[in-house]
Length: 185
Image 1 (cartoon, one colour):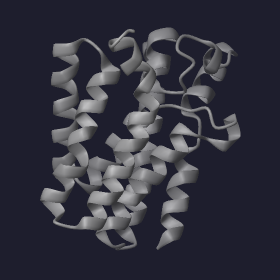
Image 2 (image 1 turned 60 degrees about the vertical axis):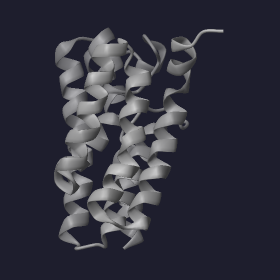
Image 3 (image 1 turned 30 degrees about the horizontal axis):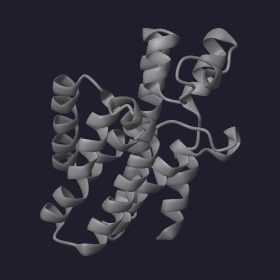
Image 4 (image 1 turned 45 degrees about the horizontal axis):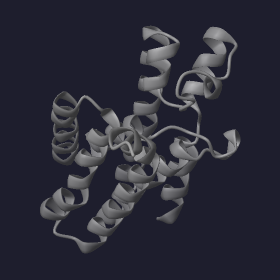
């Protein structure tokens, strides 16, 4: 049961943006733009096609790990822990000295299979907050602040809530620099 969470961490740690950027440009994405190992930095600084490939790879990692966990018929809280494992691997990949992305695409890929309702709510809140605030970092924090509470309402399971709360904390940590930009001083 816990092996699937570790597998999710390993899948999450495959550095899609790093690999795609190396293939397309020969450069290291960590030295370009925001330095983030994610689809958004790839879209912004390498191009649409490399960004799309990166997003699809990251989304696919999430969907693959979720599918494995679902096929193993794991407990409900383990499914959400798989998402957390993916995000931890994506955000802190050992192969890149623990400098990774922010975990949105892998979360989306996993939520499509594990809990589409939660995914739709989180990403709808995130999207609306982005349109209103014009800042993806603070919008992501707002979207994921809803996440643990929404999955608790749907699942009525304190373990699911706790895993969601930890994931929110991880998302918050990765987006703190954006919060500091949004609230200068």
